[in-house]
Image (tube, rainbow, N blue to C red; front, side):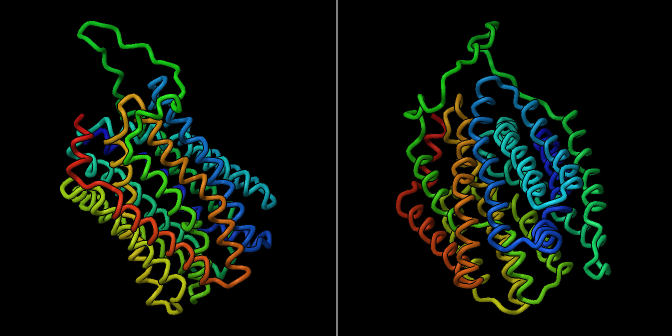
Length: 399
């Protein structure tokens, strides 16, 4: 678990840096450049979707060349470039470019990082391993939010955005330094004393028949679910409508991250015992409750409760779904499948954010959240009916 701890520290510092910036982006776009809700959705959707298209290719390169550490480092380094791109952005187009750089970095690093995590543990502790990584990731994000809150409170809405962006670069550098301590598992030789098999340059789609049927089902469900899972920027805007100012809305995300971080390890361990399905299905139902809450909540106490519930959903889903993909993916396609999972979600993110922005503008702020909650319930029903339980999944993972 030591290797996972250092990988987690990389995510800790990187997300600390990211969350010092992310809650400010929609406010920066609306306040500095007069962006509309639709434009905010388009910017977030384009950035997330373009990045996610890289994830499957990054996963393929991970399997092809086994340079997991190098690929992950280059992806995390893009996060540092992102901060400086924000500093020099003078229009919303510049902010879009910066967001694309950041998300492209995430697209490059996600698959090799997840493979590093999966190869640093055994199958019986896969949920615990991804839960530990997610916990450190979320704690970092929480600290980033706390720092930005302390820096901007009492500023009466007059923020020196560029100074805040520059400060956020410091933890990004610390995250890159953590790579010194990360160890990479090399491809094992087939027989003792034999050289490792030369990687085969076979496109992953030619091995599509090797993909577990349960994984194919889950990828379809992920796409359906993500169509309703729009950018968190809309959550920020909804909280603002409920009476939270630009500073206090940041504390809502602090609560969310701390709840998710605290529960990621125990829920990951629980999934090792009871099976992934028994957390994924309730997780999607919990998300639906959150989005119904965002649709109809109009008070501050209700909004705080919803963000707590959103943290519980995140702890139930994020690490568990990666553990599920990692344990049933063919060994030679593990990086590709982890990347494909993220890519499928990313493909749905652009229409999801655009749809949410249009629904908000045309029908009001409640409708995009009702739409997302409905798709989440559909995802839960599909998993409940068609996804196999712990016994079958475990047998496949040991095959």
